[in-house]
Length: 306
Image 1 (spheres, helix red, strand yellow):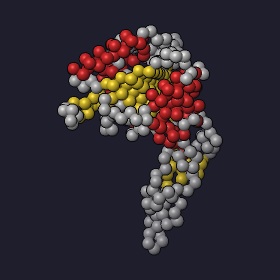
Image 2 (tube, rainbow, N blue to C red):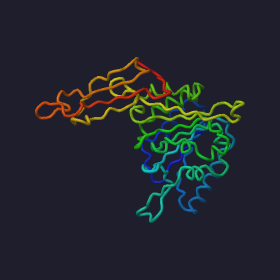
Image 3 (cartoon, rainbow, N blue to C red):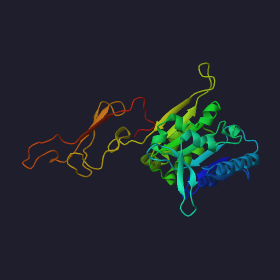
């Protein structure tokens, strides 16, 4: 079952959940794959009550679903300053004003009315602002934490201005690998990323996965993997080289990066290729030539290298 929650008034053109459902439908018997879409707006008490009624009706209509066979999509906007999530609108219909709430409050309102059994083992995917994505507590809704972390996977796209249409081929490949071929979602990430070059260049992807229970962790732990696209010449270790040199202002001026040690386990530096960078009118060196450098992020590894 695929459930899509979308914010009222949000433009869903090119939104992946519908396209993904149509693609996967071919692999299932008639009426075996279900797609539900629910618009939410719960800023006022009346709207919260209405949303709760919709959730109760939806839950009753779904019936029993085996654990691990639920995919949840959430299409929302967030405030760029704090990362708060928009929960609806208030004011006159002719000029509605969007209202944002704290992340934990948002999920407490969204997942209500006996959703615990559906959330157990589910895969959650959402497009969140970078400020939200950097906070584990924001990515992991509090109701899920209180339910002993029963969600099997939680994925977010960390882009300040996320374009959902660019994630369609990635999610399609990912869900085909997991739901049709039976692979785990974490092991399918390389396949999904290889089949969608757009998503890597547009957004980092955060994947939280629930580990199996152990003596140290009776309920398992969430492990976070961050996937970012990199290129040896233009995006070393995921660092986007600026369009202009900060010293001379020249466009697309960077020379070939110089690597210290083997690529994949060392540091890099790149300088401005313009011969006049940092020079005065008389040709004297006034300031150092434009230069950038960096190192491989700690704990990172390469999914694919060519």
